[in-house]
Amino acid sequence: MKTIKVSLQYSLNSITTPLVSNLIRKFNVEVNILHANISLNKIGTLIADITGNDQDIQDALDYIENQDGIRYKLFNKKLIWQEEDCVHCGACTAVCPSNALTMNKDTWCLEFSKEKCLVCGLCAKACPLNVMSLQA
Ligand code: SF4
Ligand code: SF4
Image (tube, rainbow, N blue to C red; front, side, top):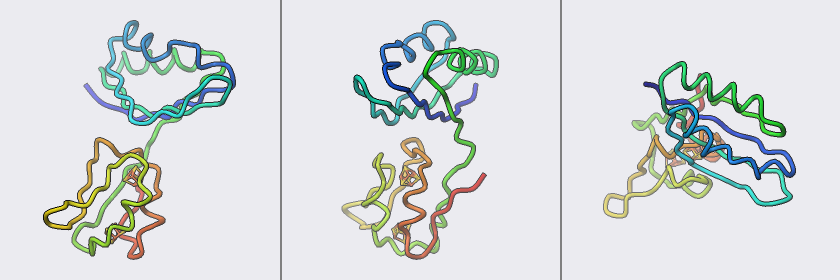
């Protein structure tokens, strides 16, 4: 079993495709939606983790590729936090869209939830000490 992180791009009028439920039903994969910005008559984005065995994941990706108006992009990078150099200023939490970065209210130290991270890189731009970075 492995987990991949994908960004799905929906073109105009393509969101009526029941993509996520079809992936789960047809390919025996788990789909964990991390972020979705989708509404009728607009282009949309959905970011999700897909978990399954290698073949099922590949079949699921091939299925997405064949859907009219829907494209996917794999996240090949991951966020690296050099925790020992972090001064816990909290600047990165203000830009994180998924609450993957939060301040612990008791210790006032930064906490990072890898599972919630969308690998968007906004925190890396916001960090004044460059202790956040995206790496392949
Ligand atoms: S912005 Fe940088 S230094 Fe500040 S809490 Fe975030 S990672 Fe740490
Ligand atoms: S890359 Fe940084 S800002 Fe983006 S979701 Fe992950 S932790 Fe949050």
